[in-house]
Image (cartoon, rainbow, N blue to C red):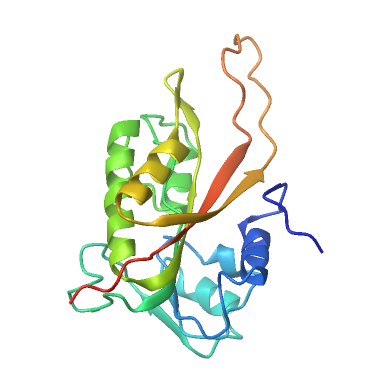
Length: 223
């Protein structure tokens, strides 16, 4: 089997399988997923080592991780991971992070509130600038709990907001490099774009891909 940099993986769970096959997630690694949700990245790859998941639905996490006897569930606080009650400073070999990477705007259609609740977007940033600031702070916190030599998996994308193109991948990559991280891998997850709404003139290409960066923390642990 050949693993390629751009593909139409069925889901992020399939992409995680390939990432593990390349050695970025090893069986004895301590792994934490900071993503709000139900642990869907881990539906197909069941990590046998120490694994910490951030809870939205405990029952769903337990179902997905039944093979893992080393699972810990936490209620995450990005301001309390390294020095607070959790004390996770430089504790993990792999940190996975799938943040809200498209600003939510001010839409109020009937299905939107349920969507926000399921994916932890109720309090997410409403503008691209605020989203960038929020995600950069979260990456800083993620970096602080990553061991030297460890890997951070971060999902992001470019997107259209208010008729303008915002380069989310550029912002994420630039912020990570400024934090001293090294980009060692980049995957383009190609999906299917929704059709252009009838009656509207198309002025931008429909965005049908997202990016998974893998960053390495090369720095020595600070005392």
